[in-house]
Image (tube, rainbow, N blue to C red):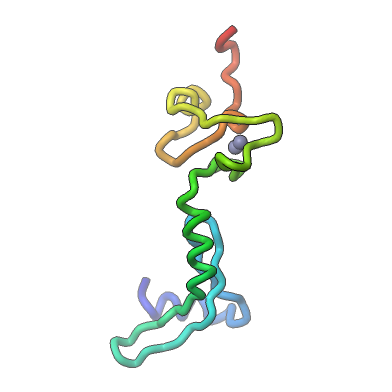
Length: 110
Ligand SMILES: [Zn+2]
Ligand SMILES: [Zn+2]
């Protein structure tokens, strides 16, 4: 994004916090600085916060409810197969979805 666009976007929102989004996990910035050399806006992040966010982001999680291998839905769930996702009208390419979040196809099975 061009700096002018960013500046224009942020101009009316000077009081808003700027956060980094790592695959849905938000990481607060510890600083925003302007670097004359190279004309860059430099965003500073806390390494520990980033590390935590990266771990959460790379951990397989349901894209609908956010459950993981270690923290399943109440009652239990499993990863829905690509076929199950497609049958429910979801796009498997968007990520994992657990069986608790896949609408059961009408009239299927049994
Ligand atoms: Zn889910
Ligand atoms: Zn689940």
